[in-house]
Length: 222
Image (tube, rainbow, N blue to C red):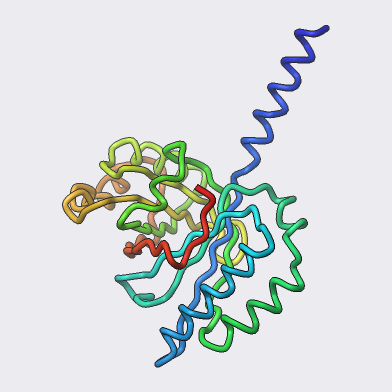
């Protein structure tokens, strides 16, 4: 009986860990001429989270290539769906956000995604560069399997594969690749060719954007 209890507890912990795979990504576009005011206001909002002992981590990156160059991507990762029903003081959070952030930037997107693969830790999210590969493909199950095959052939220090659940195209997969140099990034320049070699998928569209991690626009516990 004791052995069965231990097994049940271990399985419960394992299931709990596996369920922490939901992320929220938010994209902000600073208003023209208000970039510095936006940064200051955003940092003030991060301080609200610190003052209220928020346990969530918040990552911040700027797009440095592609059509969203200059926009901020913030993210909180490794949550259960239930976590979003129990957010810290949501009304006060929204009010502070409205006061310090919204006057200086346009809210472009709020996207929830499910993590379906990774290198096993979050250190890569703080890499010098984060390459965002956005893939529209179907059938989705085949595309997920194909991307899993491809990530094993890449040179990135770490990878994170997400499936869009809400706020975007549901046939869309997001691959985040962490690099500390352009030399390392260049080793994976052939990712499109690697995907095209995978059987059983139709690639509708694939795009690449580069992001730069900004510690001062983040709030992390480690």
